[in-house]
Image (tube, rainbow, N blue to C red; front, side):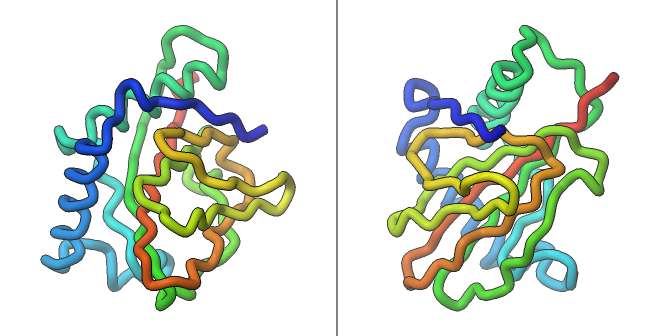
Length: 165
């Protein structure tokens, strides 16, 4: 149900570091959804794939979804992406899914995760993160981030795909 797709030949450490810097600047400038009570404490808006620097992630997410569905070209209505950042002070993880927004497939890509803090799922085994890897799963699966118990920052890029049937 959850599949992983490796992209170390496309997404480099320098791309990852650059995107982390961009996200940190977003949080520093207060241009994120901090006042929305339905969104975790440190989460960006869902517009990251609109930024040129995130193009390799957008392309590899779409290709991973194509592999997941076993179709060469996906016809889609919408694709969105955001970053979730956490450390020991982030304790607001709740069970949720992305199907309520009409999404069909969701994905997670751990940009920085020194402590290997993954994602829990109710119905299937959780994710133990690996580098350079998209995890693709049906959007209806209930999940939540595992608690990061250290001061090391975890950066997880999340994306949703709404297919065009």
